[in-house]
Amino acid sequence: MQFQSIVILTGAGISAESGVDTFRDVGGIWSKVRLEDVATPEGFARHPAMVHDFYNQRRAGLAGLHPNPAHLALARLEREFRGRFTLVTQNIDDLHERAGSRQVVHMHGELTRALCAHCGTRAAAPAALSTELACRQCGQVQGMRPDVVWFGEMPYHMDLIYDRLAAADLFVSIGTSGAVYPAAGFVEDARANGSRTLELNLEPSAGTRLFSEARHGPASRLVPDFVDEILARR
Ligand code: APR
Image (cartoon, helix red, strand yellow):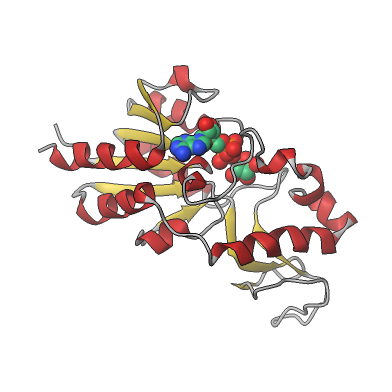
């Protein structure tokens, strides 16, 4: 039986084999820097230069990264799947886009975008954001921040995501620890709507028992195999 509507959620684990640090694995980002300092509005208010430096470094690192077979497989699924396909990512890197994915729902924002905290204008981020940068729209200095959703802020595109979850008959979570809501709750929304649910992760996530099926191993192997399986269904 072919699926009609698939929702995919990705987390940092899908980019790990491209050289992007995850957050909560051993040696992950949150073991090197306090999330309260660099991923909260309060942290930005306290020391904006430190926060800009954190995201400027990650933005600069993007150029040296390349999509891996997992990103490429999801781009193929988007091209060849005949039903409705939705790719939601918690990641702020641009590896899905560089793999060829055309519709990527960045619920936590994007490293490559900047946001004016004063007027709400969004624009492509320069290589380095700083407190001296004035907003091109309102002219306010010190207003520009990374267009990234911090803890305590509302993730983007939630209405769209819940609409797609309500209509999905397959929900797949890839490379996420299931540690952060609302993304960690998507599996329950999908189950409540009668979707099949599948976890593809290096190891069992916090919510692994909620999935109707879980496969554990590197995304670069699991995801291409999964995509072959879906596209072979008729
Ligand atoms: N293949 C598949 N999964 C992997 C791989 C891999 N090669 N390497 C690591 N993983 C898995 C880990 O087992 C872990 O479960 O990816 C998951 C990464 O979990 P986190 O580091 O918690 O990252 P994520 O789930 O994306 O975090 C969610 O938390 O800090 C916030 O905003 C941040 O978007 C992030 C959110």
